[in-house]
Amino acid sequence: MTERIHSINLHNFSNSVLETLNEQRNRGHFCDVTVRIHGSMLRAHRCVLAAGSPFFQDKLLLGYSDIEIPSVVSVQSVQKLIDFMYSGVLRVSQSEALQILTAASILQIKTVIDECTRIVSQNVGDVFPGIQDSGQDT
Image (cartoon, rainbow, N blue to C red; front, side, top):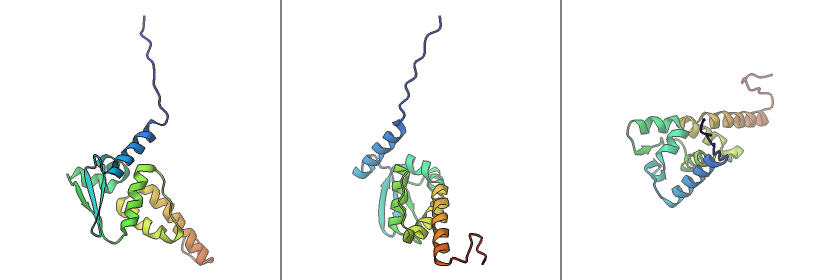
């Protein structure tokens, strides 16, 4: 007789794990990487950064635990993207979309790049109604 196998499927388990990791990060617990930008230090978990960003993954695979971000973007933009990696939620105003797009491009976060490109393109269309997405006048 074959032994019956039971499956335990917790639908929100992965979200719960990320929420716990985010709480730990906010308390400074178990953070094993420092992200530096404009003299500020942002602490995080290497596994979350590596999973959320090819840029971070490449640096971490090379053994870095202290990662410098090019100073062409703001601390706030990088902070928002790190928060996004922990939550899956990113709120972007029209005025900050280009700055977030630049930071996401550096960190190689494709989903954010795509969405911010759409927001920036929409903004250009609102300011210059005759310009299409292709950049050509109509």
